[in-house]
Length: 133
Image (cartoon, rainbow, N blue to C red; front, side, top):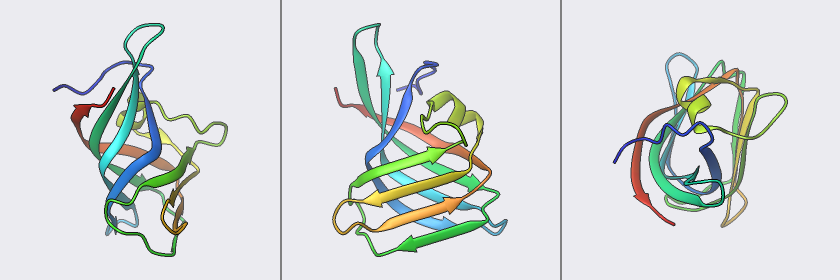
């Protein structure tokens, strides 16, 4: 399978599964996803839903917190990556590395939260897993 180059493909944080969160020696943070939803326009009226494995690298991290605990493979109930004006996440922008001001995930089972203030976000190790619908 190939990575979608569609300029309108969007990352959807809802329903993602986080495998691991780790700090980098340079002060950055990596969030490893075993399931990350990407919505891709098949044509003007039909969206395809794809599952990807990916690592989101946050750099320029000035604040980072995790409140509560979550289990591996727990669903993300809500999430957003802000760039100061918007929370839409185009796959193409994230692959290239985009300016960001904050990143948040909330987990479904007990409301655990991950929050980071950062200056850049980039998706790395992006691997399509399967088409979901």
